[in-house]
Image 1 (spheres, rainbow, N blue to C red):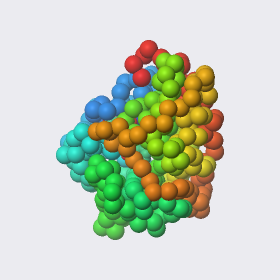
Image 2 (cartoon, rainbow, N blue to C red):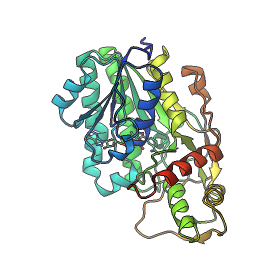
Image 3 (tube, helix red, strand yellow):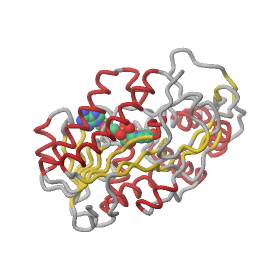
Length: 336
Ligand SMILES: NC(=O)c1ccc[n+]([C@@H]2O[C@H](COP(=O)([O-])OP(=O)(O)OC[C@H]3O[C@@H](n4cnc5c(N)ncnc54)[C@H](O)[C@@H]3O)[C@@H](O)[C@H]2O)c1
């Protein structure tokens, strides 16, 4: 059971030029990591996402592809811990399912094999609440044993959720076959500094903000009662660090924010932070757009994460959104 002391250790973040990767790299460096390697092919990530870290003396950037074993083996040699983030989420899966399944399944398999072959002590795998699926079955408290619901959901969302289930099972398989320690964290929808436009749910935040800034009315689909459960990126960076530090292994836990909210609450909150003055526009479905819906109110329970790795979310939505917006204001016009 590998517990890794962060100070003095070396970490690789596969898919590191990302929203979660950039925050986690900063977290590990602040905790005294000897080296953090950001491994990324920059297909989705960007230089802008890691601009704040670029000149850090203990950070190394490696351009590489999870689908190329030699890239992975070279980069993982000498690492104590590996955080696996490289993935296509639902929107990109919808555009290119072949590419998404390659990265989310074969990419994970290769990263685990490279970790085993190079003697990495522990892997943290970024899974998702997408393993509970979408549609009418998703309601109430979602705990780690909740099964996958798929009836009525868009195929890309099911492919994404199913690919994360496979990624988790590959971790279990490597533990059983090779003793490779791992912790799976099932992130709920992430938001915060360096927010991108790639996640279907977080788009509500960023699109609402952009519209209000342009003086337009933000859109609410349906009656606005649909549940969203977000988590602040800094809270997740801490969860990733704590998963490495804890003795926990062979386990999957939810990491969600303090509480869920309705879409209408969210739109009102972002509108206010963006300057206010406009009322939401209630609209129907947008044809051709992938939207993730649930059947009723739900909450992604995170109590197990506290028991297993000692983590619980700290940042309330109002505070996290204010930080996202402060960051966006500071980066306006810089291609974020
Ligand atoms: N953002 C969310 O709302 C959310 C929610 C739940 C789970 N997750 C999971 O968390 C992880 C990180 O999310 P994020 O929003 O920071 O992701 P992101 O889209 O910002 O980053 C993914 C990174 O993987 C890289 N990548 C893609 N294909 C690659 C390849 N073949 N080789 C090397 N690198 C490659 C991309 O360039 C990108 O930098 C993902 O695994 C995602 O599925 C995210």
